[in-house]
Length: 298
Image (cartoon, rainbow, N blue to C red):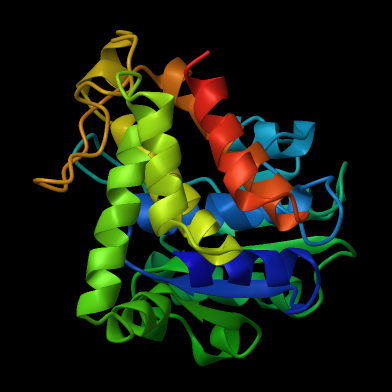
């Protein structure tokens, strides 16, 4: 997760410049969260090195799905009720037409979900746009298997294989790292649990969080857990359990996430993003974490 966040920052700040990306990974929350984070980083109005900040209007609009600069290629309905929607040539034409209109903010980001399901005709329709997009336009093709894309499409895109980053992180994990991550998960639980006393949290931070990188990993764990919690039953019903320490918080014993009210989780995610940005801007990490605890429990 930390390496993926660093990748987003590098792309957002121009260190890894490209006008088209193939993001390869299994369809689901992890791939969607990465693409959403990448879009936020690209659109973010914060200073270099602090993108995505998660608090500026552009970041909030991307997160809410209301940004006019993030455009998804739409699928046409199936020929019958039993037929699944699919991409047609007219869908590609509408998509290209919108991309040619230009951006309102920093970039215009065109996203194609399940790009590996595109037929050859549609892929060929996109070639010119992939090779020479309008100024300020970035395309993101999400695929479970990039090999299903035409070589002419792949050659015009920069590859991001999510599995590479996950594999690298897992390969570096030893027993000490596993124990360390468990401590981080427990501290994240303390951050979310309104039943935890401040002095208990402060003691845990002073004991186990030894660097800026440790603090950023902790915030990543917490944010991942909150996003997972938002997908649960309470998020669907809109019920507010009033606490991060209920079914929505991380359980160190079983590693599971439950569900919390989306408005509660969204507020906490925003506070987490602010703490992350402050730490990246060289605020003392212990101070930022303790302030976050107090803000969540205010």
